[in-house]
Structures are given as C-alpha cells and as structure tokens.
Image 1 (cartoon, rainbow, N blue to C red):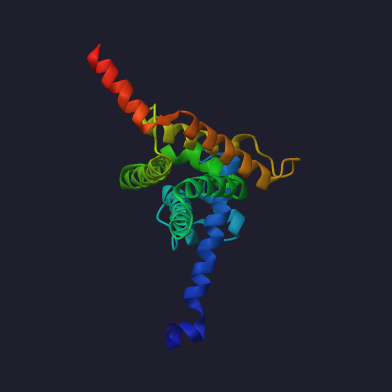
Image 2: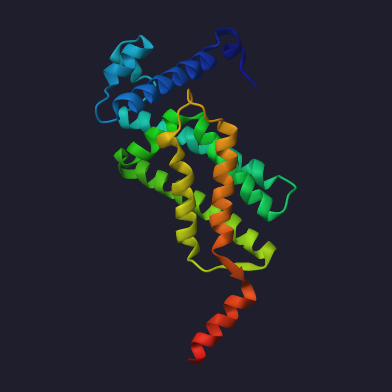
Length: 221
C-alpha cells in the first residue's frame, strides 16, 4: 500500500515510469546500433534528458544492459510458473513450453536479438548472475524432457544436455530470420517450431527397456 506521501506526489510511480522509459529506449538503441557502438548519450537523447540525469536511475551503460536482461528473465520465470500450474501431462507441458517460448521470442524480437548477440558484454557479478539463470532454464527444460520421457516410457539415445542445447538453440534462432512485417503468422511459426522440437526430442528416444537390453548386450561382448 502506498504511503500518504506517495499518494500525494505519485513520485514512486513517476520513477518507475521513467525507469521503464529509459530501459525501453536503451533496448531499442542497443538492438539497432549494437551495445558496443551505443552510448549513454544516445539513450539520454532518446529519452530527452541530460546525460547526467540518467545516473539517478542507473550506475553505468552495463547496468542498463543487465537490467534489460534481468527483466527478460523475470518474464521467463513467470512463464515457467504458469506452465507448472497447468493441469496437463508432461508431454503436453513440454510442447506448451516450447510453443510459448517461441511465441515470446517473436513478440520480443529486439530483446532476443540483443540478448543473444550482446550478453557476453556483461562482466563480473552481473555476468555470473546471467550465466546462472541461463543454467536454470536449461535445467528446467531438461526436467520437462525427462518427465515427458518417463510418461512415455522412453529414454534418450543422446546425452540430454546436448538435446536441451540443440532445442534451445533451434527455437531461439527464429529471431534471426523472422520479420514481423512478413507473411509468416507468429502463431503458425510458434506451433511449427514446437512441433519440430518435439519431433527431435521424441525421435531420438527408444523404449527404456530396449536401451537397457542394448547396454547389457554391449557389456557381454
């Protein structure tokens, strides 16, 4: 609940709005020019404030980049929470996750382009935090795949770390070619990519008993 002073002045809301405006301007500029080529002055000009005024909201250009990515991770975590709450089987939960992930990418092309092109510009603790969150998403996807396999009574013939990395790379790459002003329907692209990813994940699996028998046969040779 807001304090009496907050209600009277609206200052916290004004600050949040200004911060959102700064992050959006930075996202657009970093995506268009590239993080290395962009400057704090570019962002200040876009927002219409003096360069020094930006430092009331941020610590540095790198801080801007990190905040943009951090907001993206919050959205990703929200998606995982929503999926965990679905009353569906593990196979459908995996398919839904893949489709919604691609859909989210298509809805945030500038962000996705910036993320996969420039995340390595983060340093120190910011980079460590980002890498850890990337690991968490990979672990989450692997968990979905494992549960889908268990539901179907199958096992992968390939290391699941490779499987999840392949799926993540394939679904994220859509941001490289998709154009919002093109003829491709974003819903159709998301469904199709989810279908392709599911075909890959399930296509490299065999019945669990078959794999166990194969392993025993190799040991006996």
